Amino acid sequence: MSVLRPLLSRRGRLAFVASALLLIAALVAAPSISGAAPARVKQFTASLSAGAGSSLTVTVTNCGGPTLPSECTAPSTIGLGAVQIAVPTGFQPASNVQASSGGTTWTNAGYNPATKSVEVISPGGSNKLNPGQTLVVTFNVPTTSFATCEGTNEFTTKAWGANAIAGSDPFEIKSSQPTLACSGATVTGPNGQTETVAGNFEGSVIVTFGGDLSCSLDPDFGAQWSQFNLPTQVNITPGPGFVGHGPKITTSRFPTEGNDSSLYLICYAVPKADHPIPFKTRAGVDATTGTVSGVESWVGILPNCYDPIAGTTRPEPCVSEQFLDVTPNPDQIVISVRMPPGDPHKR
Image 1 (cartoon, rainbow, N blue to C red):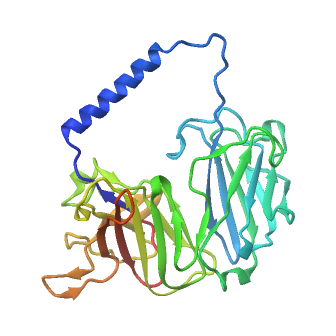
Image 2 (image 1 turned 90 degrees about the vertical axis):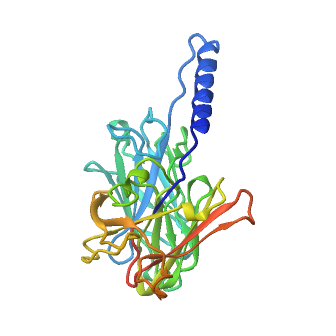
Image 3 (image 1 turned 180 degrees about the horizontal axis):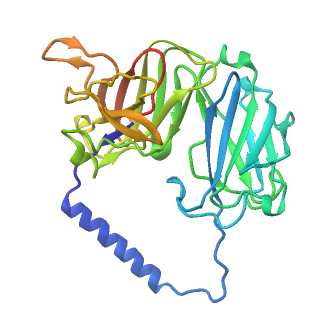
């Protein structure tokens, strides 16, 4: 999900540019330290996906490569040698742990009952996870975990440059932590943004932040959308044990400096493979075809669920609630989206 942001004033923009130029000038004028070695960059991202049955996959990427992941601020300068994935209480113990990168198997992989974690260590030498490379870690959790699934379950992932768990050269995770959400769960993303998933479903869903969703092709709002949008995109996909029974409601909260929640429009996408019929957009037309994270999808700006002219309720997906909450500080925009029965969507 992404939302339309009101146009910034010319004065605000000029002030920002001036501040940036002053900062650059200050850096140029700062004295250099002769012979000082540049600081090493150690960054990675991690994401969670569901496999068959009770299988989970955590994908770890060492920041770098021709296309730097959007969450990373710079390419890593060293290889990554060890990964530890904490398994939440309700999903212990993990079993059948396997790890590989680019066709190379990391044979030192397993579940550590002492730390309640999945732990994998590289074969060493040139077989470390170099910048730009991806490590795929798969493991099983008990099938009974999803029958009693509750709240937010974070698979906290850590990484080190050394070939040892909790070794030297700790890496910084730049993505949100891999998370399974059950009904009523709240997942925290970047910049204070949260996503709460509720509705009549069993099992779990996977909530992640970030992506390439765009509503630039919307016939009414595309030109504005291509220049101004926030907050971070939210992705909700089926997790292990997911069984849908009715409409889902997912609520986004994010800080705002404005005072008019109606300025925000909701960009939404659903894979065409899951839904052969396009949903209706805010303009009352069929959603257009677009590619979101490599998946052909229906993409468009959502209408409100309630149609005041007809006095009727529109079908999902639609915006069921949207308001400004002045209780917290800073103020927050709150937007709820009703999704169709059966399965979550990528937004």
